[in-house]
Length: 107
Image (cartoon, rainbow, N blue to C red; front, side):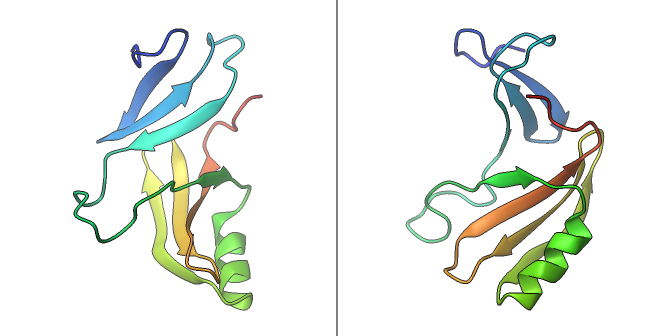
């Protein structure tokens, strides 16, 4: 499915959740994810980027977050056909995701 940007495509992998790639399947370029907002923009809540990093083990990341003073704000969730992820706040309050992909990102 076209993303509206030349050479970019988006593939639906769940309700309101898309895999984005900047090149063709054989050389996908930069991979990313996009999802619908959790809440409308009202001046409160997240107003910025919400990065998600590919990891090998989300449970290990959750333990590290807790050990180093962060807070898991979304426990491990399975996203069908994509993988499993957590969201957490670091010690400065940044909202960050960690995701183990069923198919590791290429690049």
